[in-house]
Length: 102
Image (cartoon, rainbow, N blue to C red; front, side):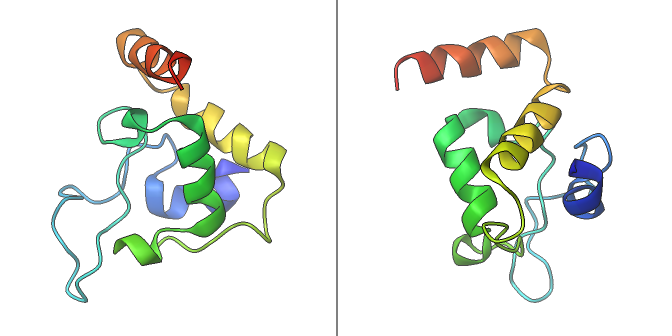
């Protein structure tokens, strides 16, 4: 599922495909960030990650389309679990701690 809907922008191992993902594209939008724990995805609770998948990132200045009508809730959760599998243990534990207080 990740390889079909996400990898073309976020990389097959969620590593990102743009070296400087913080630098705006020529059209002013932001490129897709890596999701492998090196960018900001781990700062967000699961609810925000799912919301981002469902609503996309255009309203936040990105180019990610909304997947609400494409992916089931289970598929969105599976996408998050997939990219979390590339997080190191320390990053994952910080995310778990953050979510425990939600």
